[in-house]
Image (cartoon, rainbow, N blue to C red; front, side, top):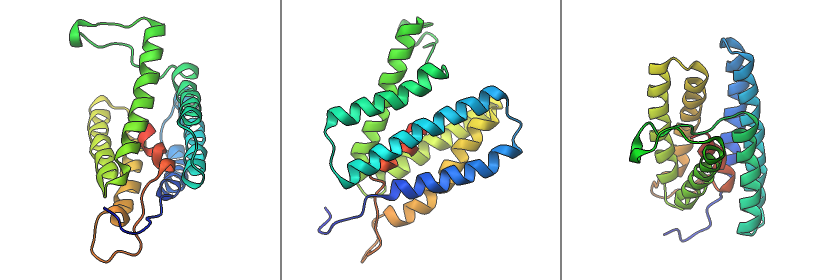
Length: 191
């Protein structure tokens, strides 16, 4: 569709804006040590995905190398801080998952979502809008359940993605268009 090259390092701007804003907001929240530990784990995994994305945007990497690095980053969050899908609550007749199955399934889902959104990034506005829609549902669910840290993270990501969309949507005679690129995975990892 694009007859000219479109820069694809928008994810770097998303990450920088998101992480700096998050560092400003977190001290004002009443966080537990566990919340802060999970947040540091999430940010460190996000940094790994950011550098992977930047390298892939500048110099194409093989899919095997990208998959290994994605698995390392996602495993940090799933295994070290026990962020995982533990129960299907009767969906498809499945209840609580054994620990190993839960970890493997969560890692699979995280990597699947990261790469699925990465594939739709080449279409104007699609990756950003899908991310915003998912984040808005996370905001609603976090508000209902009283999870302020998750609510803050999702709200900050929406507030970073909305201005990005201005440069990603298809407007006529656009010289300053940009895509998230592989560095934009970080927003998708949070989703």
